[in-house]
Length: 476
Image: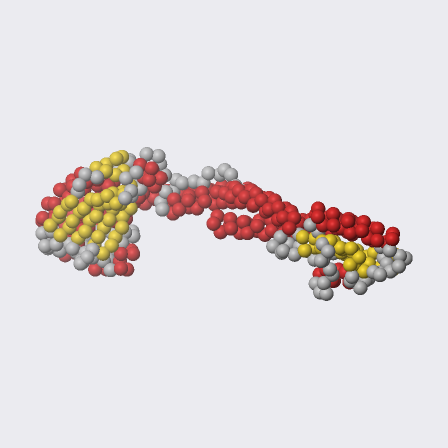
């Protein structure tokens, strides 16, 4: 969720900063240019004042004072050009030069200088030249009319290079850009903190939900940090988890109590059946059938009680030699396998993992029992212990009939048995008990096809104490 929320916040923050920064950059460029334009207007106004009385056309009769003023004006223009590098000139209405610097610079027939000259002839001073941008190698033209007796007798024109102006605009933009980057970094940092603060309770809630979904019902959400709504949600979630755990605990207690309470009446009933059988012929089929059903019911009650205890009991985790324990179970089941004509082998090198030895022994007994039970005479059951990353695996394979894909999805469910095995002795609770025993210690059990024939059962056990403790919700 953070990877989706954070880019959205960053895009919004970037849009806000750009919406503020772009107008600021444009305003800065306009302000810098306006400052230059004002300076040029002041310069043209000064030259216009000097040129007001140098207005005789070339070839006129009055030359003495006019020539002196023209020379003074030309000297000013040359000094101005020499110091600032700005071309400047005073031109009569017909475009001829009264004084100019450099001498070869004249009003062209087209272009920006001609446009400014024509505008000044209409008694309008340049106020708004086209904006200069840092990437444009343009010039800044300002024209001012020379007015005498209310008439425009000449025009002062300045043609300025824009290198310094563009440099100042670019420096200002760099400063704005640095400010934008700093603001963006601060905004990203604030967004990271904000999203972390908002989403931390969600992450904790997600992890706790996963723990509860995988059987760790003691997990709870720590109600700390985050918005008030999420803190309230965490409290509500904890209340829900408490209620769910209480209901499940009641169910487990009911199954255990019912199984325990029914055993005594069932034992009495079986005893009466045996007494009744003494008065009937030994080959009576009905009494044999009743005796078999009674024993099956007793076996189911025992399995129900074992399942309730397995789900309720706390695992006694310790660092266990899985190879030695598996080899012990292979030796224990070897006589039963030989009796049925099944070859039972084990490859059990010394390997440690965190497990409850008693619970693991019971789980392996159930798995090996199933493998031997469903493997036909002459078949093979193999047990192999190995290390797989952070887990130790015990793989039990057989050469029995195996299971279909649909049956693999249901194997391990309570009271489920394959339709092909309904006549085989069992209650359908053995693998459910196995899964409960392994889950209590942080382990797991998986089922898959064994090639070319049979079933492959993999028991996984954590090799790290932290993984086992996290799985059970306890600290080892």
